[in-house]
Length: 76
Image (cartoon, rainbow, N blue to C red; front, side, top):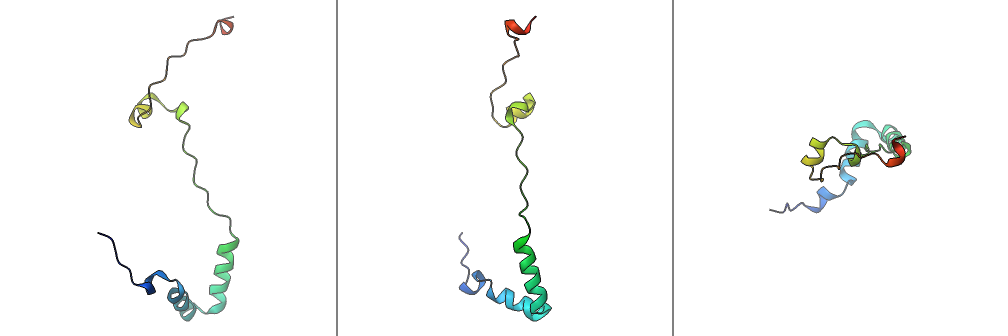
């Protein structure tokens, strides 16, 4: 089912007017400026799939890693 929202719900104007009426214009203005100037929170990067344990690789559908076989020049 798709929600049908009235047009007044989609506009932020009544909410801002309610905030100004409740807290005053200057606190709302300063909070808006502070929110605009603050750096955005970055989401954490997902882990590198090459460093996951075999159980997690299997859980997310990745093929198992090949066993490590040293190269001939690493055997010295």
